[in-house]
Length: 64
Image (cartoon, rainbow, N blue to C red; front, side, top):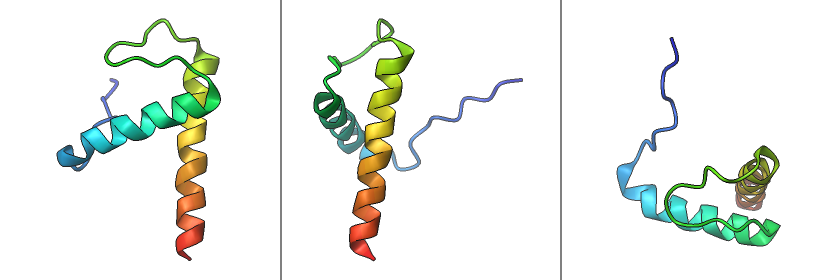
């Protein structure tokens, strides 16, 4: 059984996460739109997620 695990722990953070995702997509040159983005390739979607992780790690390292 598959369990959906991509819920945001703090619902109030959804807008900030959406904005963060759009910024990351812009930085890597992926045309992300509001709502459904099922037309993206795996490579494009992965590059957006990778950019988000990279920026989160950089932010954490700066806070050390």
